[in-house]
Length: 426
Image (tube, rainbow, N blue to C red; front, side, top):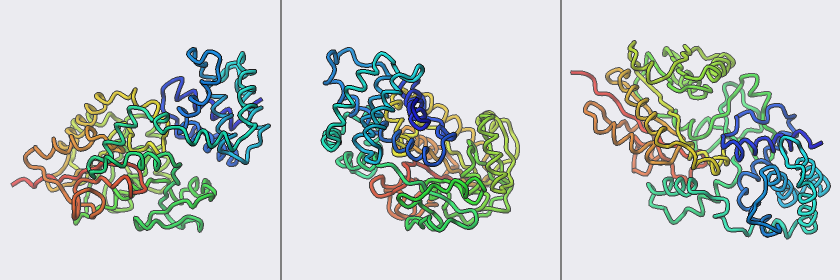
């Protein structure tokens, strides 16, 4: 019987390659901490090097043109990844667990247990040579058209299209999590020089699960933290966080403007429940509204002095954190997302008070999800860009109204955001 960690990884790979779906955030929730660490390392290797792992196997088959069932592909990928890149895993464990997975009724393909055993035994004869062969494989094997589009979009504003290989190498490195301390921080979290208050997990440090579960801090990427560290000379009375779950930005806004009345809007009931739980754990007072954002915004009601619209998007800026997007990104309906984003943005403009601040953000590098919407709003009379972020967080010199950090130098996720103010009525 395969161990729970390998079963969890195989199930996650089935979700990505069998169902074409993104991984649930808590896919490893039921694993003990030690098992979760192995599972995350193994899943990351398989997702980042899936094309290379499959290309390594095919020439060894008698009929490579016929390919392999997904269950066999997964078992071989897990076995090869452990043999090549996880020296702490023994040959016996790597091979036998993979063979057991191939025989799993739901996750494997039992007729190929012998094939999996033979191929992995062959690879195990020289683990160093196996790692060298896999590492020498062309990077293109692990890229897709979605990746190529994201790399070009990330580097184009900075005039660095020649640096796509360098950016891809960075994205293939597993990221270390970023945190915000809501009270005392664990001693082993490191202050980030890029942003006051941001904390980072040192290499090989234990993930602070208990500290987070008790509400002392939260996981929040550096880009999200920098997004909220904007300069504005007003104290808003009413704030809306649209598309608010899981609550990190709502928490940041509440801490930034403790006297404001805060509304958190979320369309999905399950995500809204999680949002409420997170806010309660962090002692954040906010009205949580479960509704479709555009319809709710157009339904009338009081205006807001500050609106944050973190819109649903392709997630192309999160490839480092979510390597499954490499393989499912081409299936994302980008036209539908663009339409949803424009609809949300247009609706948000109807509820911003004169003199108020509207911030639109997406964790995407694609210009159609950020730059194009910014250009649209810039063409509407009565709206003006607001340079609220410091120099260095966008290609333009000086304070910037278009948040777009250099992807080669900024260690956070790929974000686009823009800020506009609505002119006071005469």
